Amino acid sequence: MKEGLSLQEMAAEIERQSRLKEDYLVDTRNLQMEPFGSQVYLHMYDKGSDVLEPLEVNQIAHRQLGTHLKIPASYYDRMLSEYPDLLAQNVNAWFQKEPSKRMLRTMGGIARAFLSNRYRRIDNLEIAKVVLPIIGQMQGARFESCQVTDSRMYIKVVNTRLEAEVVPGDIVQAGVIISNSEVGQGSVCIQPLVYRLVCSNGMIINDAQTRRNHVGRVNNSEESFLLYSEETLAAEDHAFVLKIQDTVKAAVEEARFSQVVGLMRTAKQAPMNTQDVPGIVRLTSKEFHISEDESTGVLKHLIEGNDLTLYGLSNAITRHSQDVESYDRATELESIGYNILSMPSRQWNRINQMAA
Image 1 (tube, one colour):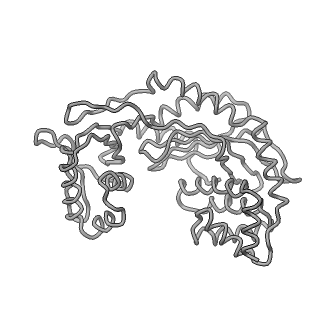
Image 2 (cartoon, one colour):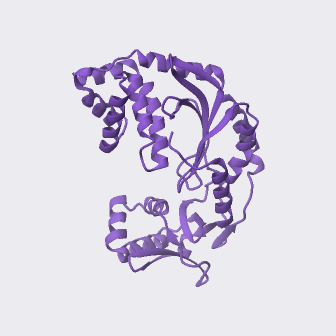
Image 3 (cartoon, helix red, strand yellow):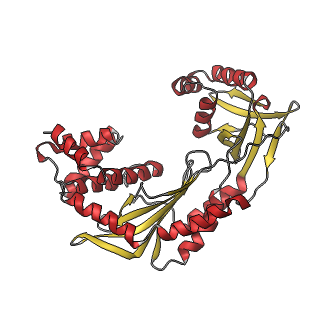
């Protein structure tokens, strides 16, 4: 499992960010993109006057702007890097021609998300307030890895009281991952995970999860812009709060954990076609959207692990997740590891046959 922040560091970062956040409901006719040198900035106007200092625009907000205005991503990126004046002209023209109400999420002078006026804010601080006391009361719970990236918050917890041996000496423990995106990159999500002690691998169980989408009522305010006040989870989310509490506890239940351990033991008995091990890795990587560079790292860990089975392959992928730079991508690889572990036997047999 990729190393992240300590619990204390994550809590401090969430608190820091919460003080810098400002959210606006804004009519796009009151927005204007303006180039300055090689950069572009977003201005918010009301009756001809600046509401805020010009905002920098991060990569996530750029992509959301382009998607909303139906500007192809490759063309948007080319204008941004080569001709920012032209990008500003395109964006401003569509802001005026097809006006709409949008939620603009900002933090510390940066536009970090450009979202629908139906977007329901469920912020990291509110999720942390709900889940941390629950985890704190769980006997044997250990915060293994936490992180706050531009796109998501992650809390990964291991329950040391619930463990099993896949084979003698290979011990795994139950756990849970809680994730949330404040910028439209995903719902609140609670998933079981399995932690492998021998190499500190984490594997996220994708087919047992609870989600809460960030979708609420349409805000039809007639104001040109509206500053959202800071607020906690609304009463309408009370049922979801209760569900979070129940799901965090259930995510490490023994029955579900035993089922995953059973999958691991079965995968341990699913041998790889050793005539072309690199070919197996390449084919699997292609099917599960693992890049060529990542595939090279997976092959290295597979050989080092000396376990040429489906179980060994899935472990090589979760082990390589610790080597990638992005914490977001590392977590995706932890999910892919489980997808590979749990692939149907006919799919695994087909991959072996293709590599023959």
